[in-house]
Image (cartoon, rainbow, N blue to C red; front, side):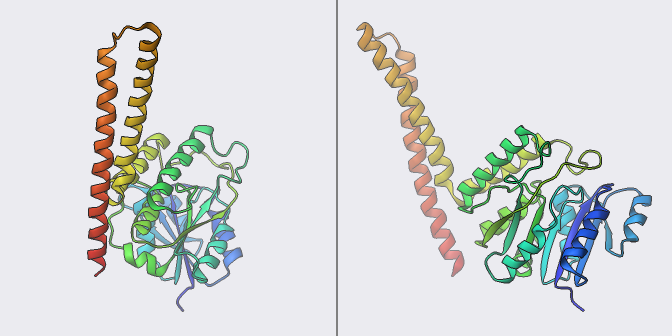
Length: 298
């Protein structure tokens, strides 16, 4: 019997995974396929096998590769993934399933930021997540506020469209980026986010480096698929900085009657000119990208 839902759980020696599995089965019922992708010790692997879930060995690196491996082995009509550390409220999965079932979304992300348990996420991680999610919203016009979440639900059709894409270092944002590029509908459900009960995260050693990786991929996608947003934004900033410097020079000149800031004046003029050229370049590239998109749809 083909399961209605498949849930992939990537793990490296996470003790909370057993509670997560129990929670999934309790909420979704028996017609759920649980696939664990593990990169741990043999002893831990054998403990996972006793859960009656499908357990796969991960041989490469990266949570994105782990999730993709599990998804490629999934049989469910709807597929999902959740972190193994017990921090994400499992109820986000059935909520996401509802949206996928009724056609409201092709990908549903579990947004944690509105319901954080005290001490579950540091200020700098929350700020970084919000900044990266803002970049994602600007790039793809998707109302997403937590693109770095560890919980998602996806339609089979959406996954089949990206199953052959080689994952890059961006966590679940990889799936959001690839599906947003292809025009799939992305939504969020609010979930509670809890403090880790056991140890520290083993899936990502450096949160800062992880955030930089995700940001770089989003920026590259903006450059390739929405160049006006990137070049126009940089150009606008250059113009504003140039105008601010120019106004300061003008105020000093009016106050003293002496013009002695030639270097700063040239800098201000250069910034304004470069800014205008960047905006024009962004407009031209944007037109070319739109033409390419229309031709590719034919």
